[in-house]
Length: 376
Image: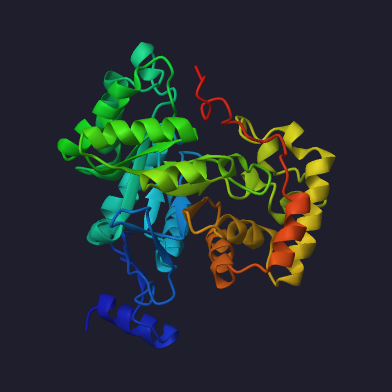
């Protein structure tokens, strides 16, 4: 009996499960075995009127998957997410730091550890923000910028196609017909199965959905910022996506960390706001009014038997038009805590009314400009 079989049997006896994460001591290569019960209690929702289902909680690699985070830490987070039934992993060309490194690192882990499960995964990427020098790398919605970026993303990820390719922002300097042509071309070329948009207003969502329909490619999904302190999508975007048959996947459901217990008692030294390059959480976001409202919401969460983060995620998912909430994490433990929000997604009318007293605009929507029709 060789050493690998002995280790397999030992792991089974110790865990009572056939799930093992083994390390070949000769080659130091991890052999990941996902939890065989990962789908038993997983929650999935249909995306608009499409045939695709996404997990109610998806995982985003916006932060913590660049070159500043060790690959072993990244692995532990991604493995925990998959073990808990998360099948959707969301990236963009500029995620890092540095830009592009999140796709490279995810591609490395995919090749080494998750390649056998590719057909269980939804992998998405986006293009539209600054990425490389010169006019074509500054984002936008032109055919040159989007298709060049998509090809680069496929190379970094080491895949032939992504499941969803997004226009990352509305670009007033590019005719929307050109952006629609480009997204449709990506599908026809087999480089993307579905297409979506991010931070598009309700009006522009309607427009690009109509343009895509003319090209026989449906708009699958819109990815806006949405949370208890940033409720802009309720004015028109939810109605617009419902009209065109698209879904919503909400990013920043935790308001860049404001809707966790991290800042309830002040700003810790290791907080993201104190790190270099922390452009998406600013000192003004941590104003006393926001902290006071977060504390009040935390009391409601306690009465529900939830953490503040779990309450915030559950609240985002209260509307059936929201397909999925997109979380990030810096540890496997955080993933586990956030996924536990799915244990209670129901709210009484009284709870919702009380939450509405504190769930008000907090001045944290950094994506307000691209989500308006006049954005440039």
